[in-house]
Length: 114
Image (cartoon, rainbow, N blue to C red; front, side, top):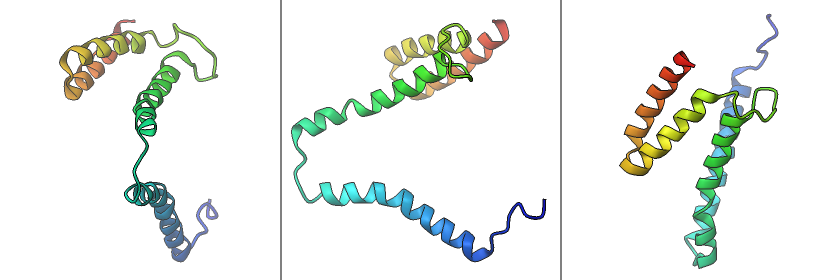
């Protein structure tokens, strides 16, 4: 177990610095480019769908795909029912806080009951 972490302080420092640049550059470069030129309207229309698409992909994977990467719509039944409840609550209230609280409570209760 003595050889688990053989890095010295300098190597840890460079890891943090490189991690900073890997996280900073993909955010800074587009901002720098797009503040100096006009963004086409078609690009803005297209970008409106990106957050919804990413969120949907993450939620669908967690609800319908098992740990062995098999499609099973009944494997996560409490989460599916809670997702429907949260969707309805979010649609009518438009409140992130209420949606999160109701979602957590419904997952907890349904996991205990089902």
